[in-house]
Length: 457
Image 1 (cartoon, rainbow, N blue to C red):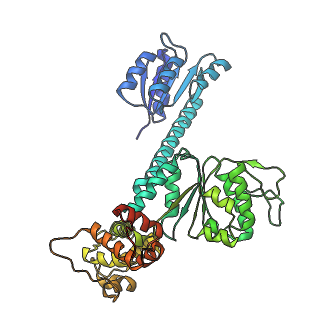
Image 2: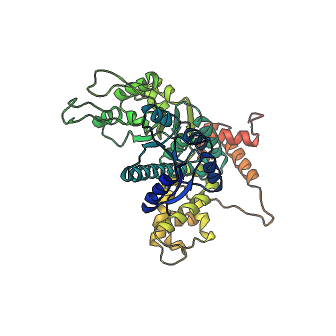
């Protein structure tokens, strides 16, 4: 597509010369002789660039520049001045001009300046498009699931995103902790700044400090140059500390200082460096137990857990399994170029009945495996991994009589919770373990159904 340029110049001969030069540079040029005509032209069609004389009868080039910046803020403007004074150039740039040229305009200068302006504009549009796609990708609405416990987590995270408070995400491996952290960042006021993630358990202890805080040249053997740490890289944005429970005790002290004092000390540096980061941390470990064991600092825990969020495991949100299976199946068959592959509904009970110890990550991996290895264009029971195929024949599977008139899932859940509580003498911890859910989830569901012990026995 040929770039479109609006040329505003009251000198007829100069306007014609510049038009020929620009059209020779393969640009589509519309010419007008005044700011007033330029505003009419801008109303009729969009232009990728405006090149305007500064001094014209009627409204000046600066007047036109101000109107363009107000009404068409994405359109860059280059101003032409016959005087070449520093004052006019400074005033033009203050008002939002992308660049300026001095008359008489050399052909090379004109074409180079226009090309540079259009390239800058194209880069801005690409960045804007990229940011829009990233924001859309990591929107809370794109987190798959409609179970009440997941929706509660999304609601809390959504409100937390608008604040500067630290967030601690707890959940089993594969539950989507980093995805939730990204959603918090990309829905926060810091969305235009970096999101920097580091897995505290994936980097050797002796290298973790340098990765987090950076170092100066010569601070230790092998430090041949200055290194910027992840915390400094995240300046202005969000630092995501995955598996925070694996962080060594000596680094916990330094992280506490980052959160409290907003400054870091690089290895070998003599002065602290100010940083502005929002911390989101995640772990699959029980930090309360680690505090009791003395392996995690209590003061750091309370700094991190200003807003605690607990992602439920997939076995506690079984109603979300069909949506996740379908999503990852569709994505996998596109990735391996098998668009005609079909997943029959008759297989869904096997997926729903499986416990998914690896959670969402396991769903993704298994869907890709099934898609790659399927023998025909329709998935069969023989294509399922043995642990999933065995679900239907498991002797421990519940046998339920389903009446032809239908049944209320809410009533079934309520009855199961009542029976489990009765079996465990209303001990919530034991009942939660019996039902294979967390105590927090049990309490939530008891409140949902209005269940409370009203008598002894």
